[in-house]
Amino acid sequence: MRAHDVVVLGGGPAGAAVARALALRGRDVIVLEATSFEGPRFGETLPPECNPLLRELGVWDALVASGAVESPGTISAWGASEPDETDFVANRYGSGWHVDRNAFDALLCEAAARAGASVRTGARVLRCVRGDDGSGATWRFELGDASGDVLAARFAVDASGRNGFRLGPEGGRVVDDALVAIFLRVAHDGVPPADSRTLVEAAPDGWWYCAPLPSGETVAAFITDPELYASEGVGLGDQLAQAPLARARIGSSRIAASHVVHVPSSVRARAAGDGWAAAGDAAAAYDPLSGYGITKALRDARPLADAVDRALRGDGGALDTYADGVRRAFDAYAVQRRAYYALERRWPERPFWKKRVARR
Image (cartoon, rainbow, N blue to C red; front, side, top):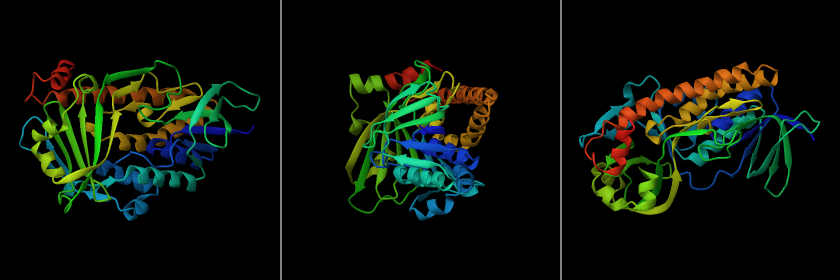
């Protein structure tokens, strides 16, 4: 059995970007993406800081041609009912973008393939085994698709997301804050909202995120506490009634689809080790409020690819440097996140806000 240099688990932004960077270094790398870029990934807002990274990846023209919607700024009602507005007109990187996540992830995987990486979609990993079988492989992956293939690799990158495969040591993830997001894709009966800025608005039991989709629909997400959601339930109508900006953005619409996903702020106790590394949200997952997940995934791809390339040549020191950087960045982010949540004081006795102020 031929051993690949690297198997990347996950074809999202982190996996595709690191696979591309490794392929450009001449590495034999294969991406295993469990989906075929379908399913309930409703949308994503890319901040302007993503733009130079997208140009570097060679996907800028394809992104513009994909129907992505320009995001000219943000509106935030946090700590007060009067919104704070940020316009990107003066941002040196230009506007942000509202994208369809399935189309965006596929676009990045196409860029990885053009660089020389192999990309397999619909490739769900059933089991992985560690140990040299004589081929020089460190890992063997048994696939659950129709092929029934077993793939071998000298190195594995876990880019399967914050709720993904969990390659590496068990029990090695530290949760700083647990959240759950209730995603709604809403179809407008009339003309979609004219305002294409990203909206964030606090409510008594969590906060709302709203943004347009390239389809002409709107993604609306309510982020709340999983214990509150499980024990008491969350009345989205009640939360929307106290979030006038989100209510106006959703307007006269109907729910086309919904999806609930856990979105904890969490970090691997160690983001890399002997023969493996974690990338993107699998390494450190930030609160959706930060809007930094994809930027972080794309920005970290090059240093991680450098570290993996050096490890394959016998120098594991760069993996330690990468892992240390992931933890330092997360610790700094966690301090900022707690301080930002503490700014919202309109509902001090509501469990959602009381819990987060107490963690400050």
